[in-house]
Length: 429
Ligand SMILES: *Cc1c(COP(=O)(O)O)cnc(C)c1O
Image (tube, rainbow, N blue to C red):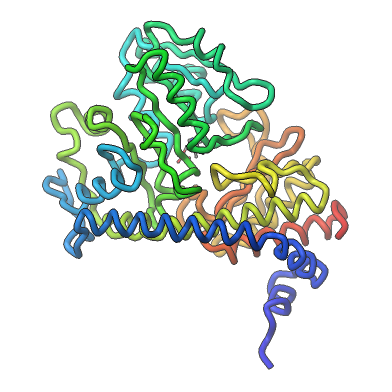
């Protein structure tokens, strides 16, 4: 007789029968949710393959260029594939964009000039935007270049403050940034339909205001594309969902021809623009990554739903709740104590395929007021489509869980976290 999965869990990872029994009960309630996630993955997989076929992706596109990168057919074809997938006129997809933060900076700097104002109608944006906007002074920030910033907070219930937004828009308002995913905040993440309504409202006030959407963590969650609803730019990171776990770096800016062209001059140089940009050995990884992305994202989503359902049963508040519809792959769990946060992150690290021996500790990260704890044992440094957990150590001690290149690995991480909290006497099953 071979070993059962339960025996293997117990022997190799210290996960007790009590925890695997509990997990079986949790999973029984998730059949419908998992089916919906699989149906969306099937739909999105078909979209990606259709786009690749439409653009005639061929073997020669899988190799790259060096130096200036002139005539890189693989790169240019991949950008058309992205534009098809995100329902935009054009796209810039480059290994020279390191991550999402840089992609956002390029999109903003390219389309804002001295005297213009940028507006965030969804409250304070992601932490790394502070220096880009100049909320924390930094050379080269938008503030440094004479671009001002205005913000309208969400209402108490997490909805858009339409009256406040109307008042905040004036003749200098040039661009509105709409961040979909919540980041390290307690607000909800926004679905395509919610953002579509917001864009419609803004364009009804002044149709020439550029609407830029921070799409980080939201790609291939659901079926709709914000490109269909008036977004001038859609921006994201290839070390999150659309990289499919294979992209070693990269970012994308999909949008109107004019906005994407401006971004290409900002990234490289006026005059050069998108004609340059060597892809070296990246083209194959970028193609294979976007090909796998719908299914990789589905695995991460199952992990998030499983964590929500399990931790709700254990008496913790989870955002989104296990029964709510989702706009991104992030699950926020209010763990109520620093000990629980550390135990949770320690377990996620111990479940990793790489660096499982490391013990995450809270540290004072630049740009954060409270110590931050991070667990990630990833193939690609900082990749958060891989199973990872993090959060600032402050009440109500919320840990943000995301990723998992496979559902099976996300599950293993969640099981180990439950076991660890149980061993520490924080929970009882
Ligand atoms: C991750 C993230 C970013 C920044 O992306 P990096 O790749 O980490 O630089 C920006 N906005 C949101 C909402 C994010 O989740």
